[in-house]
Length: 385
Ligand code: NAD
Ligand code: UFG
Image (cartoon, rainbow, N blue to C red; front, top):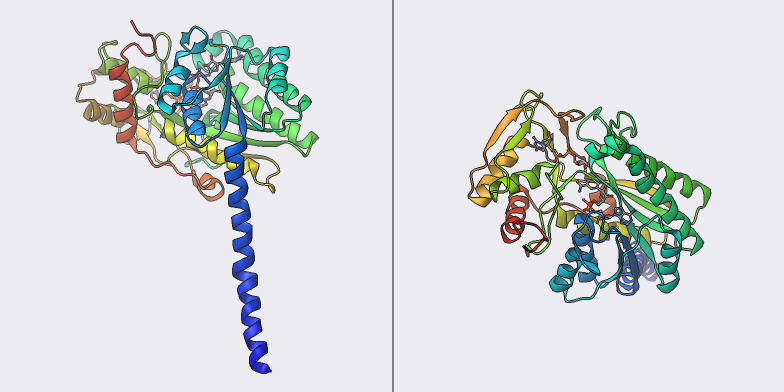
């Protein structure tokens, strides 16, 4: 009798500690897999740099994608951005596309009425820091006003989950490094662009407070660089690039004479600015992990995650790495600091690892190799001639 009791307690322990958790795990995994196969995601700004790379990963993972873009910052291949036509070639899938502005309430509403949207990934925004100082109202109208309109139309149509493209810029001048998600935000955002990211984060938090059905993930990107490894899509800035990587790659391909290194007197190992560069494909995958999190039945309200590698590289380290990857000499001169720049900024990305099961797997060599592959194959970007 005692023996039987002893044995049955074993069965109980096995059931309690192994079978039940295994059951939960399987249920969770099945839910995620089911969501992947059956979910329709609306991607705003889908023709842009981060948007197009994310659409590739969504399609690869069997999501149905509805992309919209007003094509203000992507090269138009007439009815569809050229980037999305290339996405179709990469994946062999068709992307449903709407040439729509997120501020156009009626057009947005029609999209929600036509498709059964399960969640939204919101990239659409203007993003040039310098320009935002000159035309702040355009930035507030587009980025903040546009996001508010999108949220209203979503609520009206009963779609209450969204992944938002935020930025490390919300942290301002870092008070400590590496930056964790609980670092204060909104203090020392020096330009209207950065403030739009902070304001939209705050609006989304308020929306969650007002209605417990909302689920929001704020992804704070560090410095996205690189390109899809096919070399078919990549970053295609119009005019003179503001950011380091596209500028370096245009020097390498002969479109620009030399790089100006903004400041050689920062308190960093070689005096030049340090940033946390993250490969665009790793960043894109981060959005899929965020969706998986948002689809979990126990996810509530909002949560912010840093997407970075956790490792900082200086401007001169990036120049050297790019030179090695491309086999080209990158001419540069050290000039004065750029107004509003900070000395160093890099992420603590451990929360995304712990809670999203996401970590960056591509290193600086991959970032430079893929940027060069894209630039070399497309010296003028998406424009063919
Ligand atoms: P991008 O300019 O390449 O893509 C944004 C897309 O949104 C463009 O194709 C543009 O035409 C579209 N768009 C702009 N306003 C719109 C509107 N009102 N309606 C519809 N479409 C509109 O920029 P990206 O680098 O792909 O950035 C995507 C998002 O990530 C942006 O919100 C940006 O602020 C954010 N972000 C980017 C970086 C970065 O360094 N690339 C860093 C942090 C955050
Ligand atoms: N830099 C140069 N020369 C250039 C361009 C940049 O020396 O021609 C330097 C900058 O001074 C900085 C580093 O390279 O030290 C990186 O500069 P980027 O302009 O590439 O990137 P930022 O860190 O200034 O800002 C970028 C985006 C922001 C975003 C931020 C964090 O432009 O929108 O990353 O995600 F908020």
